[in-house]
Length: 503
Image (tube, rainbow, N blue to C red; front, top):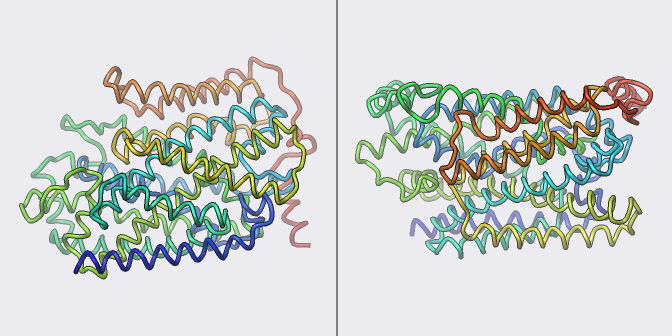
């Protein structure tokens, strides 16, 4: 009976999502509305879309699993990521929104071709985004399958198919309009679910003081910002998380492309505060990891079959079926909000950045053909990532972390430094992107295979090297004029565009 109640609530949630997708499908006109919603959203919609896609199934399922095994260092990651939202708004929000409107940019690669006047930069960054999106999507699908197999009591493969089928309908039909509206609803569910889990779990373990005492007895490292007693999460991992999540937030294409979508520039300051606040509240769910660890050690709860099942096991064990159903909906919301973002991101890399702008040499397509092609490529991306996720490597948390680091190493120098630094060159953008992507991938594979395990996170190492290469190559190569800086600083251009918009 309990499982039936959870199942009914989950089905009702999925029906609502499907209705939004079908409703949004009628608003699709062309590639612009499909990928960025026609720049028509207000601050609440944009802010909750940013915090929702930042959290993801990686955050809601994978990071509690890592917290279960490693303790509070994962909570530090949440603090860094919350601060990182402010950093990304400060560095990129205004210039990306203004420049994208002036030059008609729909993707990050659009913006970078304009900045570096190079089709090669477009192609390389589009391929890096596509590769990272597929890896990140595998983490989302693995989380999706883990959640549904717990609720439905079916095999992982069957659960994954059901979840992906529902996701496909509303993303392929509704595009970004559907994604943003479902993000809005899903983030409200996520915040409520996180608060329920946090305060409910805190009551179960006897409060913070009692929790800290018991965690210290299990292993003193569990209550530290980083491990000092032989644990694997050392000061070097702490520093890696600072680089990847506080600085690297601005290199996440599924997040920063949301800056393109806001209706007015004046709304960005409100969006920054709302996004950081709501994301910070959802981080409270990560305490389910330490809560579960204590209850397992006490013998009050059976150990999860896998660390990735910490959240679903904790929810089904200790919460009323109605509350558990809502909490499952919250976790599903986290997974689906990021899944839709990455599907659209991967699709736009193929349709906009490679097919239209490179193969068709920038030729405008009829709006209906644009929309049809965008949907078919999105569907193909769903099929590919589904097949890859049937037997995915690693835990959700580590898989998501690797993809996050890949984006940071590949994109941050070319985007965040290049948008402000006039001396940056196209050769530097090419070298840093290729080097960042390759190193991230190679180092991660070596780590997974047990061949080489560095002290710093593999993504952080690749980021440091790609940034140094970006600066060095820029000074060694000829500086070429960029249309972005042809007349004045992008900050001045951005301010002028604000005035024009108000007029």
